[in-house]
Image 1 (cartoon, rainbow, N blue to C red):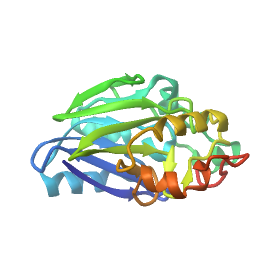
Image 2: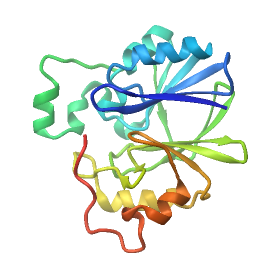
Image 3: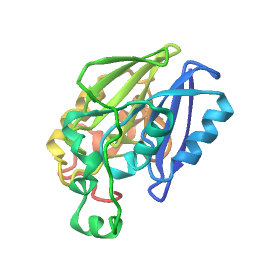
Image 4: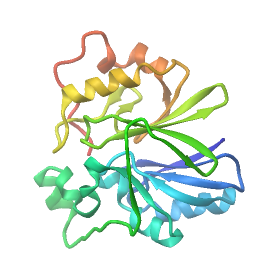
Length: 228
């Protein structure tokens, strides 16, 4: 399997393209701010043809470029129903201060073709079997995507789990207790599962289970409140 990515825009949100191999069809995961050029570069480099865009959640730093990416290639965008309204009104997912800073004259809309993700579904796209897990807490409609890789699997974690931290829960739609339940569900995955988060470096389930302070037996009273 081919996985390539880059941190997009001022938010440094990890955008990924995923394919069985070079020269094949692919999916794009989380096309954030100013992601179009980076995606086009990866598609040319690996001779890939996108067939879908997958969104781990509806925050603007993960879906900023979804309309131009889908429109240029005539492909659908997949998002959980509980975050779908953020495609056309991303300010709903942000604090008042962030809305005032980010949305001076900006308007957003849905792509022409939007399809809704459901918990436990397996998407058969680009020759890949991609399992969807609903993992609310960061937003109501947050999901992760899993796909087999060699003898293990790769987890596209969005803003659920990072190397050494977890997603913040203090924005509209976030809830810390719900986040902990989603993390407990995710931690049932094998230790060798590769975690590709929405921000920062990759890690593994085993490493985070052993070292992440938010995953200890007694969880901290509150989640982090920094970043977007």
